[in-house]
Length: 339
Image (tube, rainbow, N blue to C red; front, side, top):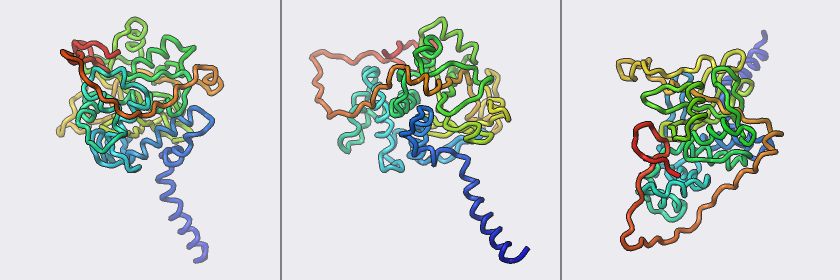
């Protein structure tokens, strides 16, 4: 090989190597498609844009967490120059969910997070105390103008809607271990300390009860053709930020052995680092996004709620605070569900 061709070969290798190393994450390019005609692409693009704003923290395929730069209630800045806590408050406001949580201390302050420079300790306490992952999904769906999706402060509400009313829902319910994920889907697990549900157990609850249940859902932003042998998902309130999760895929495009939680799992500790996987969860359902032509026939999405100027609130004589209620409810917590 001549020196000229050798130089060209080395130059091409050097140029291609960093591109190949970074091209697996679909978000840097996908985030610019928030106005795409395809609803699945819009939904994934909005989630990706938020992930970029949060400095791109991630959980790798081994369940290891890295890249945390800022936390949910901090005044530290995101990449767009916004304080982190104000961004999270914006998810609640934009999704139109704060009125449902008016009984929770600090919720009223969060309604006006976009105004003034005050640190608003009440709102920031609310953002720490109340799980906001469902608010993130609801806000993402609204911004993506996803038809047939009704947001909620609790994931189980729209999982139940997809299970009981599939003809009017944007999603269909599927067992996550037996189907192929695709862009725009939601992968969800149950957050119950003393019980493991799985797909069958969750289906039983959804068909027989209207009670609350602690859950978490991530948006699939890349799978199969988009991500090679890795599925890329983005979720809010994952380790206090908007975080990407990577899960391995089989050659057929299905999840390759989802790391399932059991009641006999060894507790995570410095003595047992192998037990410390953030991907080991009670994965119970994959909400599969319906095709674009079917979504077009559903109820149009509600627009994002814009913040309004604060209105002074004067308490009535003898007025007392409303009783506490729960969003991500757990069996035995003794609290009523928030409306």
